[in-house]
Length: 124
View 1 (cartoon, helix red, strand yellow):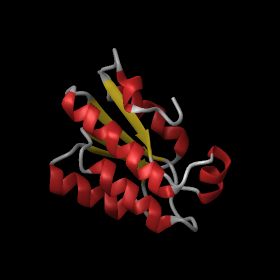
View 2 (tube, rainbow, N blue to C red; view 1 turned 180 degrees about the horizontal axis):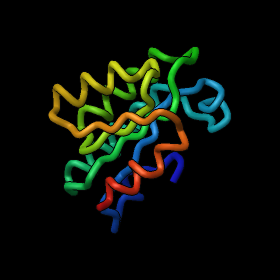
View 3 (cartoon, rainbow, N blue to C red; view 1 turned 30 degrees about the vertical axis):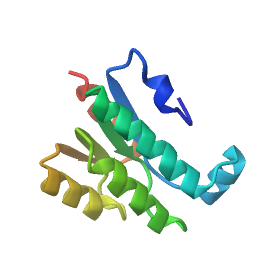
């Protein structure tokens, strides 16, 4: 559910975040970066309050908004129960740090096409 709000988390057991900031995407959705941070924080608070599983998927790597993506990734990843990302992407180091620091399971895949298997296994 793109742009989900904390009120949308009724009757769910897992919240999946796909992390990657795009100024073009934000403009298209008419949301500022600051508003996006606040929305994500509300979702994380609700997930923690309701003891929901948090799964983080990072599909991209190098792009112009990498600092904003890194901030979002660190925010969400610190509360993740499972991390999935691309091997040899600019986010691999951050994902590895988050996994080690938080003792969070991490799966790195070689391509976006490989994510589906790891994603499905997260629900087993």
